[in-house]
Image (cartoon, rainbow, N blue to C red):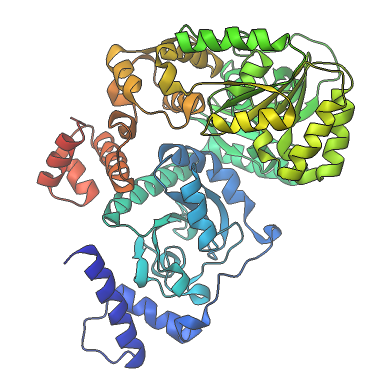
Length: 573
């Protein structure tokens, strides 16, 4: 029976049960029991308009603090697949959602699954969060298997996270995506992720971990300062405020903690400047760091990773761009640097690697997106004042401005004698910059995507490894370089940086081989969502089984022949 037929038969079966008051000779399954419970609690599916919401203060933030770093890493691993990750508490309330692409975000927005949404079974019927709580085991709910009509286009695959001592359900991990054939491979993927979360809980139940967790919770209640906890595997918990710390700063704090200083007050240099730390060493491997704020005394900063101050590249495309930009900097007109997402436009404008939250001392940096927060009038009043100070100015992200905002920006630019102004524009089409040239009386350059300057990949790799704290311990092997050279790089340099962070966080050192790369990169750009999920699920199972294919097939719940065939198809062997 094909996918469409299966979904159609499921919908008909549910309809027959409603009109027959559930009088059926069919063997009752867990799904039928869930439909019964939903019908008794809610009546007809048409009675459910949308999932209700609770305010943020009613959510269990401690779950986010404990599982947040893990969930962020999981989200990085499924980047580009259209999959979204949900963490719900024991009441079925969505504590947070994670996604790495617009397709996944649009999917969640369409079904109203946002932070604070209540997905308990007695509230919205059968679904991949509430039914997991009702059954206490992993569940996949596809299309019409959902009770509520507005979930008919979704597949939700969830698993409970149990307390390692009491056995009570603490949380639910759910993978959600648009309805698509072949979603069975989401089951082993969510099992693998939930198993890792369970192991994480076991680790923090050990004496040192328990002591750190208790101190972490106490400090979180006492102060609103950002707090980060580190274990042998890296950052393992963050407070709500700690979630806002930029990843490069997390790496600085991690390296600082590895030096194993005694507990006390220290000063380190973060992206925002010299920062005072309240540092606690707990046992041999656990460290707790609280950011107290800007340092009030001068001192030598502790342990800051190397951040190259020069931009690298030797491809003809890059050298031509740099030459063109240097010429345009000396004209009387502003310059627009246009390019795709993640190409490094802000870094090029600032003439050094840019990290979100950076505040360069030698230039003024304006975020155009803040106009949507402050309001056009307030933002442009600030912009006019800053531009007229005469310092070089970078205006980042002018694609965020609407027509009225662009017209206001034109007035700001035309009303100043400061001609050392650079704007960045994220776009897929170089012609978009040409249109803005006329409106803003500016010149423009096109920053090519990484796939068009792939000759620069080795140099970029070296610089980004250093910037992400990897030192010289991570070399790109020739086979891995060949694979990355034919990859499409939809996320450009930002995606390359994310890949390097993943490899470093996995504890890799030495030569990077194809086995260290995500399967999606090994296969290039023409993979469907399910193919990408299959690759990641198989790789996780093989790693868990130490390469034993028979054991991997048991973990995945499929036949050995299927695993052997998929390994050959995806060149994973």
